[in-house]
Amino acid sequence: MEMLEVILVCYCGNATKLNTSWSNDNPGRRFFGCKKFGSGFKKQCLFFS
Image (cartoon, rainbow, N blue to C red; front, side):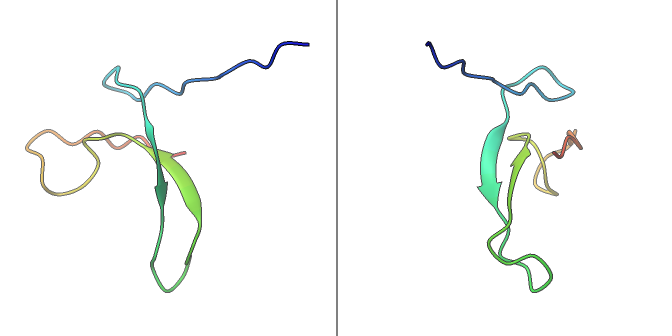
């Protein structure tokens, strides 16, 4: 049987990347987010899964 690979796409159409949270509330929690997530971008993509 063949394994399927699923690629999540964010609101701006880019493939998401797997991140790991190191906050006090969610240490080690893994989540998918856009490469443009965060305050370093003029136009942020707020996709979070």
